[in-house]
Length: 173
Ligand code: IMP
Ligand code: MG
Image 1 (cartoon, rainbow, N blue to C red):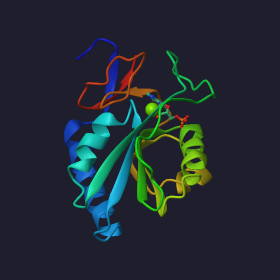
Image 2 (tube, rainbow, N blue to C red; image 1 turned 180 degrees about the vertical axis):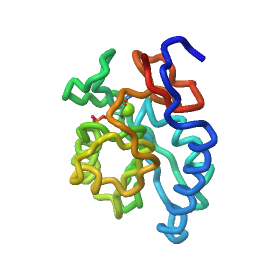
Image 3 (cartoon, rainbow, N blue to C red; image 1 turned 90 degrees about the vertical axis):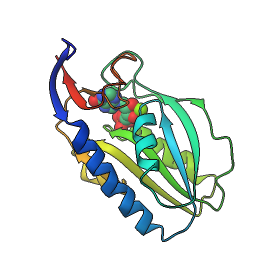
Image 4 (cartoon, protein in one colour; image 1 turned 60 degrees about the vertical axis):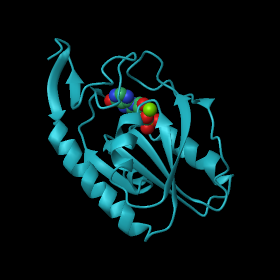
């Protein structure tokens, strides 16, 4: 194990099991309707890849890249769009997939932005929730795991672009 990793919070097998459940729930909720899944880059790319393989619907995938953290472990409070959608989401069922809910800034910004495109439905899914703000949490339709308010890495999440490839979620020293 990397010397900077202090503790494994969620094991690889627990992640896989939970994603199977999420995929089933999402497949049931949309009742066979087509779904456009929007992956928030970069942090959600591994989660999206596993989630998508557990959704039994006709799906199309879009990517949006935003940045707010830079090389810090706290949000800068400003969000920048680096890459935008390639197709219209007008009249589509849209599910936004992100890695983690923290201040809620990213998702509320995404909501404001995407609603302008007039999707048929708009829902949000995060793998991890470390926010203890009930209002923010209720804006998210699918949550993988509740975690303590610690900075975590792995399974797509980085610290200064490192650790994304770890198959588990861990805290840093
Ligand atoms: P929010 O806008 O504050 O909710 O933060 C959401 C974004 O910040 C996520 O999409 C992550 O990219 C990043 N982030 C928040 N907490 C962590 C963490 O513990 N580890 C790595 N990235 C994080
Ligand atoms: Mg992110």
